[in-house]
Image (cartoon, rainbow, N blue to C red):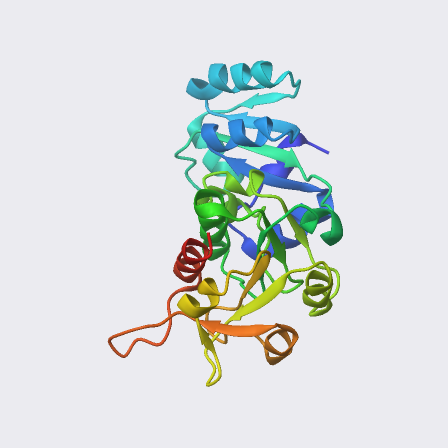
Length: 257
């Protein structure tokens, strides 16, 4: 297979969501993101750059002690292959790392974020950035959650998808039961008549907490809410009932830090 095939049709989201996991790869876009992926121990299958980024790409590989092909193409050729104008000048086809088991991921964690049905890659990336910046030890993605290693998620996260340990839940909502059995208090962030305010939940001083967040439109499923120890809500004003899920993740993590 031509190495350039990994980079074709990057704007076709449906195709890439199927193609990249099948090939065991993901895309890292931009020098900083590629450097963070390399620093996390991820290995590139190749790097595709415009001429002015060639030296920095080779330097990043040398610094990481990694050998990989550097494909150099003009900016016009980059756009023709990928389907969009590559403003950041560099793309890397990275080998997907093996994900840890839920038990291994949660073993030493105190704060875990669990994502159910969040299909917007921008929101997934933003949640990872909040988790890294404010403080969460791990993220668990339900089977219905978008891929954290999709190019848009990686880009929005500023590469923190390589920093925050994460895994994909094999059983749902059984993963929540597994977290409870591991000693976590599972808090479902949702609107409900019997919901506890985030302030009151934070004041209770739970040692290990797993915060479950749901889809942008429909919120958490009933099954996820029923599997939780408590339904928790962020107090709101001004006739606004909820926040965007990425914003809500930052608020919740700050309150529970």
